[in-house]
Amino acid sequence: MNAVVSILGKKALGNYKTKHNPNSDNIRYEKVPVYNKKGEVVKHKDHERSIPVELSQNDQKILKKVRRKAYRWDQGFRICCTRFRFGWSAIIGLIPIVGDIIEILMAMSLVNAAAKIDGGLPAMLRARMMTNILLDFGIGFIPLLGDIGDAFFRANTRNAWLLDTYLSEKAKALRDGHVSDPEGGSPHRVPTNALNQDIAPGRQQNLSSQQAPTKPAPARTGGYLLAGRERQPDLETGLVDIGPSGNGGGSKNQGKKSRK
Image (tube, rainbow, N blue to C red):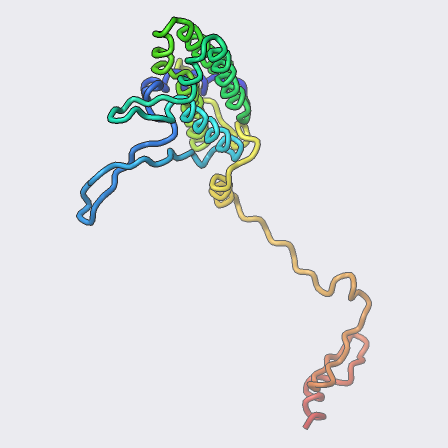
């Protein structure tokens, strides 16, 4: 288990900068094309990023929460007629000393929220997040330029992308059933519940369809409440059964004749 988490951490650190621009890519929304009737792209609109269905409900909830916080703190506002975005973190950072302390507390709360995923954060991933916070804190102490640099560095967005990339690698490992160390070595098998405490509904449905059908239990005849009782004749329809002791008033055919 620890080996798998460590491998996923290494893969996340290696991929999060190659797949994303961690300090500028929007962590919460992505651009999706809008088509006209002819199938031509007419514009793009913001759409909330999807979350892998292989993740547990807890992991999905935490990823969504971390994305939302990072977006609000680093990219919640946009300067008119520009593409530059900033958030509450940059605004609070303008307050001397106190603002920097509040900023670091906000960043720490995001890391603590990310650490609540199933299995916890790999040590190397948490260390990288703490490094981003310290760098952001140090930049903020530079008079005037520090506040501008802080708005561009965006430690919260960087840490959110680290978590996003790690959980993407985790979902891929759960889907494939194995994970390979980027530094070499044989693949490690990933059992279904090794990384998740519970399975998301979509994943659970896929897994249940792959399980072998179980043999149905034999039907109960009579049950314990009817044990030792004789079946009563149906006098209204004239249909009766002959019990083991010969009681019951004759056969079904005799019942029909008597009705005539």
